[in-house]
Image (cartoon, rainbow, N blue to C red; front, top):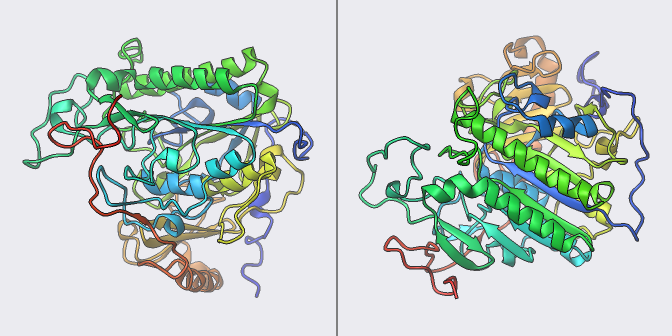
Length: 486
């Protein structure tokens, strides 16, 4: 069926625009030279919070250099909020397929990412990689759901967001702000810092301020110790999620406030990681991906995108992404092909010579052709579905995006946008393109039969679930059995 005489073209999504005329081979690395992988995932970073994606106020010299030496992916999609986005990254699937929940996970929830899921860490570990996560997990804090249960050899960080704790511990207010009044008589339990499966301490304001530096030091140590063999380091910072706690040497540096301070500290952290790779001769053997778990909050900058975290507008789900691998990823280039969090697993698996799970559906694709600048690469995704929790709220097909009528913040009627000419989703052209709407009816029906439109569909897999769930630190300060410090 002809969808549109001049605008829907199957190859649109694969059209990558090079900023510099740089070309490299797209061949996979040989079996004897498996690359290292580092995925740096920032929390709530806006699309234009960093200079390579348009920021005019935040100073990000290290990310500027990373972009000059690497490739910006300008249509990279995550999810509207934390847990679903991380599930997509770990499993290579739409979040709803692997973690069918309406929002995010909280301390002591009895559900989380099932141990039956096959994670990117498990695949790489089987392929001979050392695997580590340093930072925020947010896929469950019960037995069978923590990182060591999901393929990681090493874990250091917070099991969820840095605001998931009691008011009195300073996790509900920014640096220097007074403590708010508790909304409930019994708030959330204390926030734990964990090393492997051991609770190191209860997180207080000084700990919040030291998180970026602490994670960075741990990352450098991991790279130094594991550099002799292939490694996968997942570095998901808690920054720049509320509450805002820039480090003591960073607070007050930016004339634009503490949020900018924290963005700039994150940039420093990235610089330290890349400098370590260069100093140890690992740069040409390491693919580094920098991104964000969802769109920015109103504190951040998402321009020219419309919307913020929590929505299926572009500003809620399209995030900055830079891929860096000297000699393999073309320097100073950009690619507008549709890619996303769920592409990380199949891409790293292919580069590592690992084995994809054959007993389940994987929604992501190997996007090495897009990352490496392969000429005339076929689109990785002709269609992309935007879920907010269990609800399908939008679909992208080529350059077209349909915001479904069910999306509350978009109004009562379906709205059609051409993202090539209207990236800010400002002009609804649904009335002008009935033939495009018919195509979207087909796509909607296909997803209704798979993951479902508003509830758990037949293609959704089971959550991990435990009986007698409890937080890692109880409200009275006791550490859960099996997680105490030695």
